[in-house]
Each structure stands twice: as C-alpha cells, then as structure tokens.
Length: 483
Image (cartoon, rainbow, N blue to C red):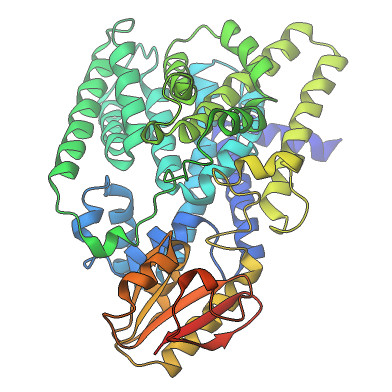
C-alpha cells in the first residue's frame, strides 16, 4: 500500500507524469526495433530516410521538393555526431514517439481539461493504437509534424494569459509543423484558419498566419525545385498503390479494421467534447478518408493516408469518451470497462509491433485486402525482416563477383538496400515491370544483370530472350546475367 501511495504521489505531479509517459512511449517504440535488429523496420526507412541521410548532397535537388525540414534535421544530427544514418533515423523516431506521447498528455490537460491520471490514460490509449503504430512504422515526419501540431494546439487553446516564451514557442511549433509534412501541414493550416473564426485571440491569429506562410512557402519552393531522376527511383512513395488495390472495397475494409473499434466511443467523445480546435481536423480528415465515395479511382487524394490520420483523431475522442463515461457513472463497472478497453488496445498494439510477418496477424482474413496500404506487422521493411539477410547476401555477391560498372535491374522495393550496399560504380535501376525494363535494356548495355524472386530456376518464358544465364540463386532471389 505504501509503494502504491508513493507511485500515485509521484505521477500526481505533471512533470513526473510527462517523464513517465515519454519513457513508456519510447520503450514501446524501441521494442520492435530491438526485435528486428540489426535491420531497420519501415518501408520509407529503408527506401527513403536512410539512403537520403547517407547521400544527402546527392539527393538534395529532390529532397528540397518534399518538405525537407525533417530529413534535413536528420542530416544535421548525422553530420554533427558522425554516427550511422540507421542509428540516427531510428533513434530520432524513438524520441519522436516519446514526444508524441507527451503531446497527447497535454491535449488531455490543456484542451480536454481532464486531470493528470486521466490524461495519462488518454496518452496510453493513443500510443498503442494501430493507426499510431502504423504511422511510426515509416511515416516518421508525419508523426513528428503531428506531435508539434498537438503541442502548439495545447499552447493556443483558450489561453487567457500569454508571455513571450509561450508566444515564441507556439510560433516556432507552427512553423515546424507547416514545414515538416505536406499532409499534416495542410491539415494544421486549414484547421487554424477555420478556428480563428471562433477564437480571435492574438496568439491564435499569429499562429495561423505563421503556419499559412511557412506551408505556402514550402509548397511553392517544392514545386520550383529541380527533380532528379536518380532520386526519383529511390524516394519512397507510400501512396503509390496499384490501381487494382485502390478501390472502395479495400478502403472501406481498411477504415473498419483501423477505426471500427474506436468509432462508436469516438462519436460519444466528439459529442461530449466542448472544444472546437480538435473537432476541425477530425472532420477534415474524415472528409479525406471518404473522398473515394466521389473520386473512386483518384489515388492522388490519398484516401488511405487520410484514413490513418482520421483514426488518430478518432482515437483521441474515443479515449475522451471512455473517460467521460467512467467519470459520469463513477462505478467500479464503468472503471473496469475503461480498463478493459485499454487492455484490449494494448494487447493488439503489442501483437502488431512484435509478431513475425509470417506469424499471427491482428488483421486476420482481411489482411489480403489491406496489405498494400499497411504492413501486416511492424516486423517488415521492404521485405520480411527474416529475409533481409538474403538480400544483403545477394548484394554482397554482386559486389564481389561483378564488374564495378555493372548495371543491376530489379524491383523498386529493393532500391534503398541497393543504394546503401552497392559498391564502386554499380548502378541499380528499378521498375514495377522488371521484365519490361530488361527488354528495353538487354541490347543496349554490357555487364547487365537482372534480379528476380519466387525461386525461378530458369529464364521466364514471357521474356522470350535466350541471352540469359543464372549466376546466383537462393530460395528467395535469383540473379541473371545478360550475355
């Protein structure tokens, strides 16, 4: 009993609660990295962040067109500390997750006006959500931008008194949010502009102006930057989904898998919440999530990404709804249901973070409908973590047994590994249609090699070429040399 009272006394102080939440959130983010070690998790991590930080100057012409603040920050850290890009990218993602947990805590304290213990409940409820874990898997700058946006919201919401430190902090957070990510920056800008119609405080108006300016400047500068064909084959485009999979059925399934559990209580929380600042981005993201109802084949609207973003805001209102129900009923049954809800979320989140890719999936039989939008577990980058060593062994063989000026062709999913591991002047070209790329290059280059998968032990009949020789094979990859 004494130990319990000491613990309760410690977390009753806001600063200790913040430290505790940061520690738990960081630990949650570290665990899947440790399980995957020495390989990174996240599609964008291996195909964008690590290669770009490794060769920042080489790819600046295109980085600058993609809201470069976050990756530039990684580059500065990498250069200043002289440590590996993998370590920098992973460590900063872990720190960002801790900061995100803190930002949710302050959403509870400053905007939803709930006490410390319930704000901690809200933070834990959110950081185990599938939508948040999927975002931290490889959409690092999205989560970073969300964290700064939530912290800024906490500073500007119905603040009666301000000082220079609060104003400066809110303006800096507004600028960082706007510069860090296109989607979240747009969401923040529109939300603030709408909110100024109901809250005409000087701080809100200033943040709205700053956010709008930096978002517009980043957008204009991005469109004016020169695109590099080299980086274009490397950069990660998670929204580039095959039209076969981008359809109403799969998007609807994705919404219910990610948001079905929190939507009912989220609606309750939305109705009970008095604030308007959080409701605005939720309504915007819901609109984006269901944009496919009108524009079914328009992938550029990124409905799948809006579904993820919408789920994060829904989860906040869901957590708030559960808290309000527990407070109003104030019975052991209500508190038990709240605890049970949290336990379910935690259990699902842990399974999603640690299970092998070919093991048990929280998605069950619907996984085949949504696997092109989201990973089935976090133990994946451009391929199953357990298969990473096969690709690295193949690249090592290429470095040792092929001409330094060789041209290698293969799938786009391996381009990040090739950028990091290929040595000398070897060049990797990727395509969704490897055989088509092979056909266009077969008679134009010497020292040409093609990588295929699925245990193909001979020349694929559909290529209709005879000048091909297998020089390397394992149970996952084959390497063909073009004679």
